[in-house]
Image (cartoon, rainbow, N blue to C red; front, top):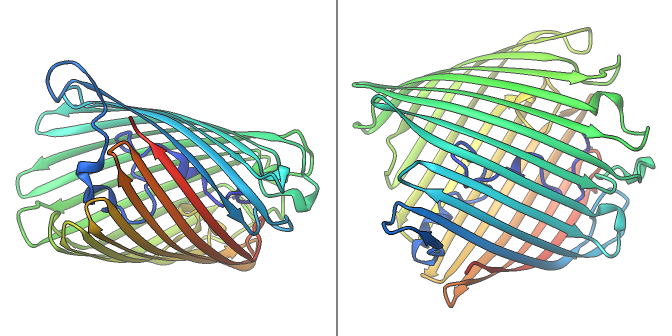
Length: 402
C-alpha cells in the first residue's frame, strides 16, 4: 500500500522462488523448464544425486532507466545480485540467501539494498505432504519512490513471511490447505511518510477440495480468508483493517497437458473497521489459458478480478482487474526469447489507477556457466503513487553460475 519502490518491483517478487511454498516467479513460469540442460549442476556435497547441492550465482546488470521514480531524472542503472540456493531432495530441504544492490548514478535517491533469506521443508504426512517455508527480507531505500514528497531521508523496510501447506490425497479427491502470514514494518527517519504505512500484517488461509488428477478436468471448490491489519491508521487515510472471505468454484485441466485451461469464479464478502469503506460483496474469479506444444515453446494468458486486499495495486474494498500474457520461444537449447504484458487496474485513495508493463527479453547461455540476458521494457501508469507515468528500461544482465 505504500508507494512503489524506485526500481518498480513489489516486495512480494523479492521472495525466493527456490524455497518450497514461495512460487512468485514473474513472467513465463514454464521458461525454467525449457532449458533443463542449462541449469547449473551445482556443487554436490555427497555421493548420490539426492545429497546436498549448492547453487551459487552472481548476476551483474547495467542499463538505462528513463524514470526511476516520479519526478526523477533519467539515469543509468547498476545492479549486483549474488545468491546461493541449497537443496537436498532426500530431506526435502531447500534454502536461499541473496542480496540485491541497486544504484542509479543519475538519481541517488533511488538507491536500494535488499537482503533476502529463506528456508523451506517438505515433510511426509501419511499419503500427503506438509510444506513449510519462511523468509526474511530487509531493504534499505534512500527514498522508496517518495522523493516528490520531500521524503528523501533513508529508511528501512523489513518483511517477515511464513507459509505452510498440507496436500492430502483422498482417493477420488485431493485436499489442499494453505496458511500464510506476513508482517511488513517501515522504520522511518522522516515524518512525511503517512502513518498508516508504518506497519502492516496479513494473514491468509485457504482450503481447496478438488477431484483427483486422473481425468481431463479437475473440478474444484475453494474457500479463501484474508485479514489485513495496519498500524497507526488515521481517518481519511484510505485504508483500514479489513477481512475478506471468498467462496469460489470452477474447473481446470489436469497437470502436464499441452493445452491447459482454468476457470474459477465466486463471490467475496468484505468487512472493514471504521467508516473508511462500507462492507459489501464483489464478484471475483480468474480465467487462465496455457499452451505448450513442445519443450521449446510456451504461451500463457490469465485474466483475473480480485479484492484489493489480495493485490499489490488498489485499495482494500475495491476490485482489481489484472491481465497477464506471456510467450516464450526457444529456437535452440541455448537461446530463449520471451515477451510479456502485465496490466492492472484498480482504485487507490478514491482514484482510478492503472499500471501496464510490456517487456521483451532474451536469454543466451554458453559455456554452461554463463548466461547473457538483454531486456527492453516500457511501462505506462496512471495515478500510481511514487511512479512516473511513463518508464523505459533497457538492461543487459550477465549471470555466472559456476
